Every structure is written in C-alpha cells, then in structure tokens.
Length: 261
Image 1 (cartoon, rainbow, N blue to C red):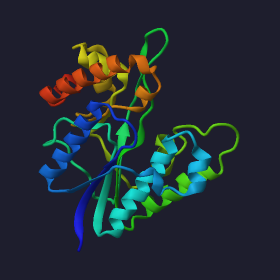
Image 2 (tube, one colour; image 1 turned 30 degrees about the vertical axis):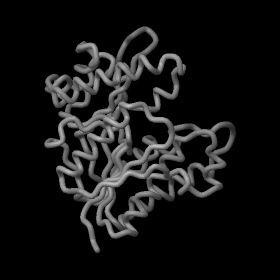
Image 3 (cartoon, rainbow, N blue to C red; image 1 turned 120 degrees about the horizontal axis):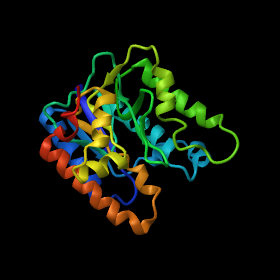
C-alpha cells in the first residue's frame, strides 16, 4: 500500500534528555502534518562491514550512510517520500515548518556563525546540510548521494577519517547547480548561539538572522559539540541547551526571527 510521506529518526548511544525533547517535537510535528513517523533504536548495523571498519571509531560518516539505508527501507515498504530528521533537530513552530517535496530531493540551506579565539563572530559561506534530508522513491539524486558517500570513504587514505567527509561539504558539491529543494526554515544553531539564547542575549542570534535572511521554524542543535567537551562539563552544557529550548519553544523562534530583515 502506498503511503505519501514518512518521517524517520534514530539515535544510538546515551542521549541527554534535551535530545528527546527534540525528538518529541518532530514526532508532534509529523502527527500534525499527517505524516507517518518512525524512530529506530539502532541503525549503524545497516552499513556494510567494510564501511564500518574503515570509519571506526568516527561515527559521522556512519550516520551519513546509515540514514540512507534506513530511508531505503521505508521506500521498500511503500513510502513515496521519506525524510530523515536528525535527532537534535528541534521544531519550535510546527505550523510554520513545511517540508518541500516538489523536486524529489530536499536538503536544508545553512549558514554557520563561527566565533574565533578573540571572540569575533563571522558567518560561513552558504551551504547545504542533511540534518533534514528528503527524497522521493526512485529519485536519482538519492542514489547518487549514496554512491558518493560510499566512494568518498572507500577512497580515503591516510589517518583517521574526517567526521564530515560525507556530510555537508559532499552534499553541497553534489547539489550545486542541480534542481533540488532547499529548506530555509531550519537554522544551524551552534553552542555559542544557543548559550546567548539561553541567557537572553542578542548579538549572535541577531547576526545569524541577518546573515541567514530567513525566518526559521526549526533548528539543528548540533549535538556533536557535546561529544567534544569533557564529561565533567556536560551537565552544565545540557542545562544551557534545555534553557535555550525553553525559550525557542515559548517564543516559537521569535528570539531569533525578530531580527530577520
């Protein structure tokens, strides 16, 4: 039986409570839109053994391929359009968050606000990200991306494989100049932005809104930063994340969107 749209998520490992707040927000949004929703407790076991061995212990490219395998399972089960949503994506304005399905392959447009060692902030060039990644069954770009993920890992030589080798940079290269849908309703919020949101500060949220130029209804909260800090500091980090989520949900994103020109 054909099903129009399916949303899929997964998270392996010990997740802090704020991750499940994000997951709950996506589940509620999917229900409101009438989309099928699935969450898988495991998904790394779907990647070929050679791929897992080449990537170990780096989980970034494992995630990039495993989500494509999980999406393919839903295609095989009858879904017409499948969207993967990272577990650290928070939907704070579900009525405004729309999933583009028009061209058959959907990524999110991103601008990253970076802070240097001296405290200066600047924006990265525009790119695309797969934190929300959608495709129609049989879409050639989906197949091309999966082939490229496997190829870039297979061909990597010398040292530990980079976390982002199959992520945003590869997606940006593959989709450049191609007719894909780019969602502008998802912001990429680094810990620096989230800390300022949590404490009611304006500088970085304003800078993001001005440089990105679009109102956002959801945000990628960049969980991977948590893995890079000392375990002893994670409780404080998690408290900041919860406070930022509280403010984003309460304002439906206006703590950032009010600065969009």
